[in-house]
Image (cartoon, rainbow, N blue to C red):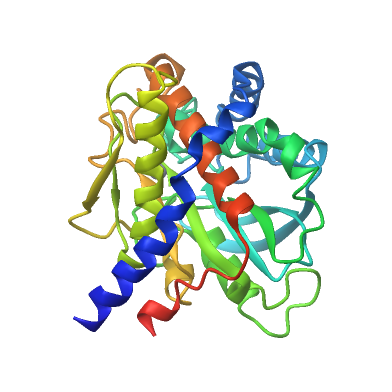
Length: 330
Ligand SMILES: [Zn+2]
């Protein structure tokens, strides 16, 4: 009872995010940038391979071009089949000295398949990575203008390495990068710009399995239901304004029926509020050779990019004071 009262209070507070969503039309699509970025990422990129190194460098270069300062979190670990490999999480930050952060995240590694060395992992997660960079690109006049040097809120783009299990998904063979980064950010002795910054993440928005037809996103956590609802509000208002392609709505105003293990788990365990944007049911091409460019559904991708861009813009623009979604679960 107490919990639901608190949650509905927060929901009302966060709904404010969506009311003037159409403001975002001042930030037009840049599909050329999206396509170019996706092409740079959507290639085999299993940890330890040249393709992986080249995608890592590509993401770092893109972040620098977009005005982000970048840090890497690099570590070596022994994994099944491949032996000792070096993982590299990439973190791009705007306003690194801000009190709190909105963190957007995805994973850039592709899954290892012994009999499919050409696996490009389009929805899993080349598209989410390209969407994050495209969001920064299309909002760059705001991010490098009014937003710059804000002391209340910064923006963090996290590209996790090693999300995929090398052999079979388990607690030890999966989410290598996010387990390492969450531990590092929660260690008070971590030096450098991001020391003890896990408490400064207001919400971790994790994008995964995006780019197939008929995406449906449900709300996984009560404390971020308000934010999920804001995405739905933005979708409806853009749709009413005929700014979206087709009639399918992707943001379902309903809780999900279960938990999906993913890069957010180590952050969740540190009480970081999580908005998990993963399509359920999983698209049929997931972890098959069909997860490639030919099976991407462009109208859904373009719609998602528009909605997500509006959401990020509204969150940052409307941010005045700390959004404490942690309180609801203490
Ligand atoms: Zn996967």
